[in-house]
Image (cartoon, rainbow, N blue to C red):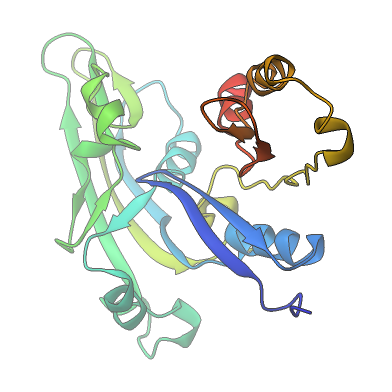
Length: 242
């Protein structure tokens, strides 16, 4: 019998901002543990300290600092390099901040003509491998008129100048370090057919049974002589939820 602490994982769908996988040969406690780890235990970079030098917008300094902290940051150097590149501030030997435990960002924008939307693209990073995640996917980039995550809007003549420091952390410490927005799991049903009853069906009745399921959970041959269950499909459930 498979050990519940050594489950099998099969990735069913993987995109830039989404993953769906099947977890098998385990129990719900392991599935929930994985979900909780994804939310609160995976180290990520997030803006932690903000120094606002000039802010003549209608937004308060505290509100701007909160917005900056919630902007996702991306490391383009690969997972292994990320693990070697950064350490937690508490584990670093520096006195305050250094390239091993932090990344500096700067922003200086003035609205010369009309209303100006200040977005995450205006943040300048001290590390070329680290940049704000302006869009969750290429599809979103192509379907939007904005150029990144909006931080504030400046009226004519208003200015915003600040510096920020991003550090390594986990979601358990603060939500800004959580790498996921939503992490959920659901049970896959075990579907069995009563073969004794099914053997009494005519091909027409089997065809009606096959076509009755909107998720196409049944498989059959061309003549509808055999009907059997295939892999459970949840695509329609996810689409309905959206």
